[in-house]
Structures are given as C-alpha cells and as structure tokens.
Length: 303
Image (cartoon, rainbow, N blue to C red; front, side, top):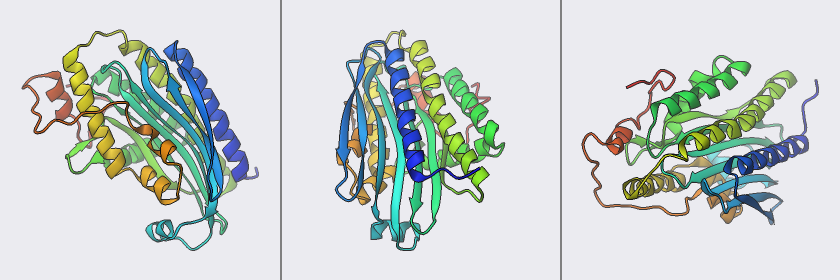
C-alpha cells in the first residue's frame, strides 16, 4: 500500500467538506452555504463556506484550506523544526445554533507535511453546550468512542484526556464545554499506519453531521426565553475568549499569514460579557458551570 500524496489528501478533505455541507443543509432544512474562494499570497488557498438563512443554525462555517510555502521562523521555533517548506491542509468547522438548548460544535481534521519528510496529522471534535444535558454528553462521547475504537483502543481515553487539557479556559478555571477528543502531531511509522490515521480522520468527518443532525433535531424544538438567550450570550463570550487567547489553530493561522476572515469564522454572531455574573443557586446555569471541569467520565455521567 503506497502512501497518499499531500495533493491526494487535500482532494479527499475537499470531498469531506462537500459531504458535511450537504448534510448540514439537509438537517437545517432552510439555510444554504455561501462559498468564498480565496488565495494565499505566500502559496495555496482554500474555500470557506458560511451558512446563511438557517432556521436552526445562526452561524456556521465549514472551511477547507491547502496552503504551502516557507515555514515562518515563529512556527519553526515554537515546534522546534528544521528549516524547510511546509504544506498544510484540512477542514475546520464551527456551528453556532439559534436555540440556546442546541450546543455549539467544533471539528477539525488536518495534515501537515514538510519538504524534509516531517509530517503529522491533527484534529478533534468537541461539544460546547450552553446548557449541559447529561444524555447528550453521553451520546456524543459514546459515538466518538465507537469511531476511535475502530482504529485504536487507546485513542479514546488518550485523546479524551488531551481534549480536557486543551479545551480549558485557564483564566476562568473551566473547560470550554463537555470536551470530546483532541490529537496533534500524530505521526505514522509505516504506509499502513499512515493510511489508518488518515481513515481515522475521515471517519471523524463522517461522524460530524450524524451527531450534530441528531442534536439539532432533538433540541431545536424545545422552548426558550430571554433567560436562556442571556446565558447563551455569556457562554458564547467564553467561546470567544478561548479561541482568541488559547486556541493553537487560530495562532497557527495568523502566524502563517493565513486568511483572517476564514481563521475567525469560528466567532459567534453575537456574544456578551457581564461583570461579576452570578448564577442563581440550584439553576440549570449553575449546574452547567459546576460541570465544566476536567476529568469527567461523560460516558457514564448521571448526576
């Protein structure tokens, strides 16, 4: 089995973008994606698709990119790499729903290669509910584990813990949501292992519209009011804080002179900050905040 080329991987990721966009349009039932093709001055480009006119999705982005060129010194020093040109391709997704009872979701699958032979895969999928619903968290983690177990029994526990550490808002002492999985610099020692990791990333891409369509259908019909919308605004604010302060993907994109509009497509349509906000004791908001913690076994979570 020969190893797929970087160009072949990029083409496969483009097809993954097509599949996810089609499925999300069907699940929403009203909105459509608007495509924006762009080129990177230093090399490569991509196509960013933004969701508009949805009845369930307030703002959604599914971005594909394949960029290349000299690796910036900042990246070389940060990742302790030798000087060489790079190639990076992947699909990145963030969906912000209208109904506060539908969670925010994020997924990213990516491949990085250098002319000197250095290469690795990265990615993950995580859920950020405005309100933690135990059965939704269990469902989400159960479906992710099924995919992980098809490829390596060690993936889920290892990558779940990695997500807990990665999606952590240090200055707030809380996780961004209920986590999921996260992995980076996953290298292959053989062509067979390379194909296995690639197929793992593609399986996550296929899983994305399945789990999110389920959560959209289940939770969108639920009623909500001003209280829930206010809380949604605050939780979106936390999402912004993480992405701008801690997210490695945002920093990588900006450090490699990526396209700012596409890098920041993950931002919600609106967000709020309230000085010294206090949750009502015993409320659903307080329950959520108490469980934005590392190390929770969401597969068996039943408070």
